[in-house]
Figure (cartoon, rainbow, N blue to C red):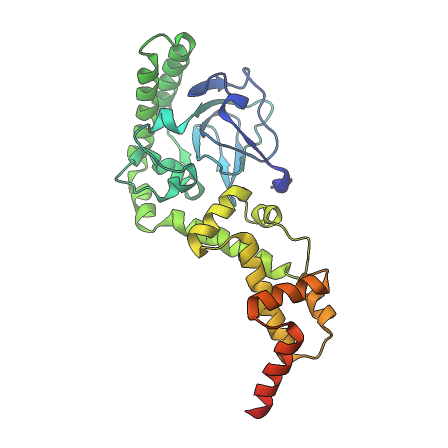
Length: 305
């Protein structure tokens, strides 16, 4: 996806008429044509016009009769053809699963048996939810029912809307029960996070000498939002992005100091520090001695061995 680093995150009321639930077709509001994220759940339904969907780090087909399920904060883009037709449903976590007290960034960790209706969202990057004409006709009946209900919004309508939404998700879960359950057994969501963190690690390794490297750049390289990357790093490593980068830079600095004779200023640049004095301060804080003394002591130990 292009322009990943400039991807915006939209709030519910930025793209919806209500804060809890909103359903529309292509005539109601123009589609977003750049990679983006939002802090709510979304389902897109392709009524006509084959295309593809970019979601996270994956590109999957998105033909007619296909539904896509997008978690909050998941980077995505569906380039709808001009002649295509689609329906879109936005809804908040509180509307969808009011019983679930969970950070939206941790939704992939919810067990399948606890909230099975989350399964299509958790495994969207691994499956294509393309339905037969008969099954898709059931989806269209539910969509029309939701559109009709959403126009009135009288007392009691919200539970009926939630019921229709759960029927739609129940239908998809029943049709894809076997692959969804197998993906849960294989811990596919966690594997996807490991792959994303591996992309971050590779990006840090390749750009370690660049003093301008930032959390935003690394997140873009892994198709994550900066907030989500920060969350994953804390959960996986217990470190912030800055702490992780500094740790890698200090390790590289030790390697250069022990195994070479380059000037300290040159080693600082190789390790992503544009200022030698700042590099020396950070090195001393990490190792208790300035880099020159560290080199002398380590080389003396090697010579005495």
